[in-house]
Length: 87
Image (cartoon, rainbow, N blue to C red; front, side):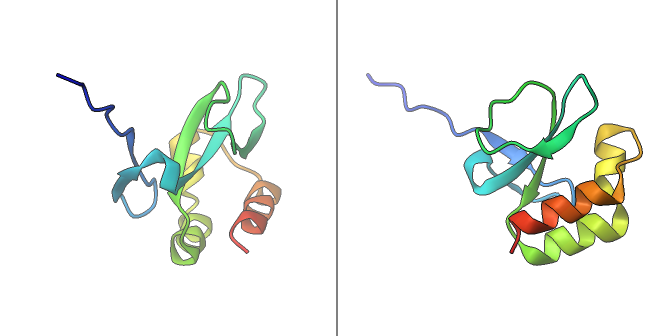
């Protein structure tokens, strides 16, 4: 009997929909306080996931959902840099 590998399900911090983590964008805050997009999905630090949807990104910026997810004030430059990932 073979065990089927389980999908890693994560929740979007904006729309709260659940999806396989490979279909989401992972944003990480590391110990040094740097916030960046983790393309490897393996970087150390606190991760937050966002749908690869322009509407979710717009709402992420409007509601400042990363501030809640990381419990810190996220600079506007970080949101601008993240915007490049959605274009």
